[in-house]
Image (cartoon, rainbow, N blue to C red; front, side, top):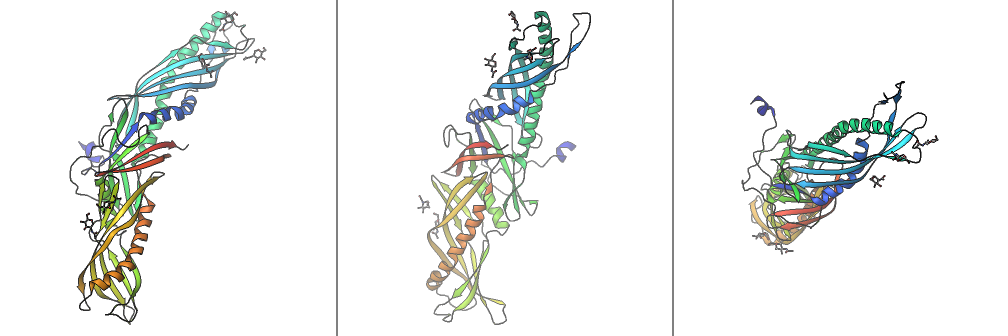
Length: 432
Ligand SMILES: *[C@@H]1O[C@H](CO)[C@@H](O)[C@H](O)[C@H]1NC(C)=O
Ligand SMILES: *[C@@H]1O[C@H](CO)[C@@H](O)[C@H](O)[C@H]1NC(C)=O
Ligand SMILES: *[C@@H]1O[C@H](CO)[C@@H](O)[C@H](O)[C@H]1NC(C)=O
Ligand SMILES: *[C@@H]1O[C@H](CO)[C@@H](O)[C@H](O)[C@H]1NC(C)=O
Ligand SMILES: *[C@@H]1O[C@H](CO)[C@@H](O)[C@H](O)[C@H]1NC(C)=O
């Protein structure tokens, strides 16, 4: 009970993000995993004490090299991952009078369970592991050692290795877990705001993929912000995105709603525009400032191949008065629809916008009497369109961190827009 209170609060809102790691990713892990596995299997073998003769001289044994020609990983539905590997050990045996080199092939199999860990990151644990030794062969033609001794030496090596190999594989997996733990690292979203992803439940594992549902916790000035979202769970269809890709990510509309809310709360969407106003009403060029304030959260809408962003800024038009203070002339309620193009680079989702259709203006208040909306529309519209787009594109161009772990990048990503959600199909690249 007390422990439950100390653990990070369970998420109350779900931002609907699913990451699917497909079997292509397992092939990639098999490839890049050979080198660390080889490294991990370099076991120290204690000397062999030959008790056959009168003099009991210890025979030093050294593993010169481990070569893993074959590593294969497969999903076990509802459980985790099955590992099959073959490793060739090159072992030097310092026999008297002549040292010799042995080649000992070993087949390794292990089952690893993938689950949700206590800090809501994926945790891999070896549940069963075994090693199967094939007879060693003597390398070169230094085969002067007695066959009896060779048999005893091999027995000794097998006993040591069969104890240690699985332990070393477990250690390797522990290192992997530390790495997977970086999923919950904080990443900036905009100025003073951050995002952190964590798992919301046990992973779903099928023969074809492992799916993690993750939640985004959002922080403004270091404080978590609470969001009220509709509780409809997000379900990512299968299959979706590019076939054969390593990772498929489903980002629900809710995630975007939350991020926009965060940016709005942080004031990151507000801007000031300076310019000049010349109308029938103000025939002398008048230096003005437009204070663009987003009181309402922008609304993003996803239709197949079409993402739009609707902004409803409140624009206050101020004029510099004689005493260098600003005086409010009038204010406008503006509505503008933007087309949103999404792309992914490294581990960030970036956006660029362009204006769709017309900008709608309505006068909210005026301190200078009647305002001709038609005239103001032409002037304010052009005055504010370019800086608004530049501001939004700079902000969205910085990108929003997608779920990832340290040193893992998305490569050749493709972004698809569907009804109510976005899919990112991508390769993975691990940078050592
Ligand atoms: C590893 O051992 C297997 C079985 O003895 C053998 O076929 C293979 O050529 C060896 N590979 C290397 C690189 O020594
Ligand atoms: C084989 O024996 C020769 C001569 O005794 C020695 O120089 C060589 O290092 C030995 N080879 C191995 C693989 O131990
Ligand atoms: C050493 O050589 C003998 C005879 O050539 C052979 O029977 C034996 O299998 C060899 N031992 C090893 C470990 O290769
Ligand atoms: C996207 O949807 C908006 C609003 O429905 C529409 O005005 C626009 O033409 C569409 N764009 C594309 C490229 O389909
Ligand atoms: C923006 O798009 C919405 C939904 O398609 C539409 O109802 C609204 O009239 C559009 N506003 C403008 C200013 O084009």
